Image 1: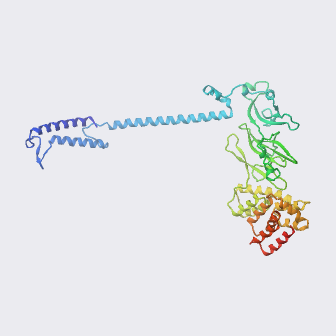
Image 2 (image 1 turned 90 degrees about the vertical axis):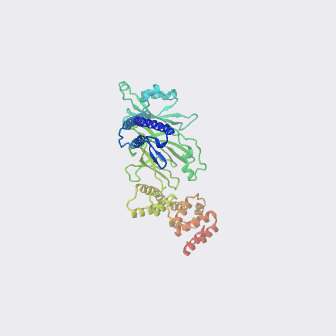
Image 3 (image 1 turned 90 degrees about the horizontal axis):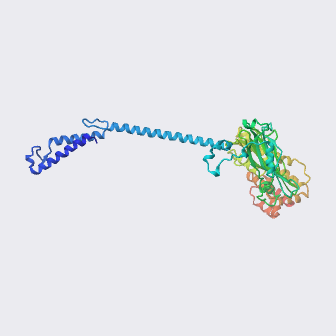
Length: 525
């Protein structure tokens, strides 16, 4: 409220007070400042009335800032200017704080990246860091000659292995495996405990010296895969009785893949051997070196019960070849196939992605059924079915094509085994059943009076690989008589002939002709 209003208000109070004091002594009808009575009440003085109106109008104008007030000073415009200045100052302060915070975040991020790739470049932070987290800057971080590196390894009671070039020229960069020797050992006594990569020091201080000096870029500790992981395919095939321990097995060899390996980067494999009876299992790791980031990374573990090394093979028809690991045991084919996929990891932009049959890449009932029988070992029937589906669909996704190619590679193996000439009827029947040749297997069963007995023993000792194939085939097509016959035969072999007859009688989807035929087969077992 302005000073003028307060002034007028004081006048009003003074006049009112005087008027009240006079009214006590004088009668209303004799008051010179009052108007005649109206409704029995004295009317207020004219001056007072005008003053009241003036004050009331001033109050109303103060509430409505857009209406100018005559005769009364106001400071509303001045107040608004002050508020605007304060608001502008606050906004500028907030913007300044925001920009400074963003700059701080960027600076810290950059320092973090430098620390990951070259810790020595941020050693200037040491005065600001606590004692326990200071960046090492001792002589070990300085470049060394090759002789100094080998001498250091020797002092650690370790053995330096054969130097492997990372580039075309060994003088630029190289990888060196470091071995340790087992005590009380007669064969394969040395095993790899560490991998180191070095790069030529190109800064003036070291490049000007007569001998070449190298910076240590990677120290990669090596611990072999655990036993249970190595023998898993043998356990699945019921060759190994125990699941294996968690004891790490040693790796004794490192080699670079040949020219078939894809780019970018350099691919290596670490290898070890485990012998158990007549089985020699090879195992190890797949490594990848990224020259741009000077990073060595483990990509996956591999194991092969047949002792086969991993290979890069063109499987899916993509630009890059796929990594194939053979895990076939006996007549049971098993392959692990990996595709190269881009990775979000900055240090290593690629990764190995295994091709699996779960989930199905196509939302199609027939496609899902084809993958179901493939997962149960019926590779050839599945591949034939998928070829028909692909012909109907025309164009399919790369994921679906990868699954089809995966099944095709397994189908090649089962077909090759089934086409062989077998001396044993049971082995021939097993190869036919694995490939889904139900009718051909029944012909072998009926070919000789001695065959049913040998084949009964085969079915009786089955650990699930034959029965799972039979059940999967019946789930897709329960009316196929050849598969119905093998279902009755495997029940009779494992549970007795009467059980085989009983199952046959309970099946409503078997025709009378098929029942008579299967009963004759059961009589021979």
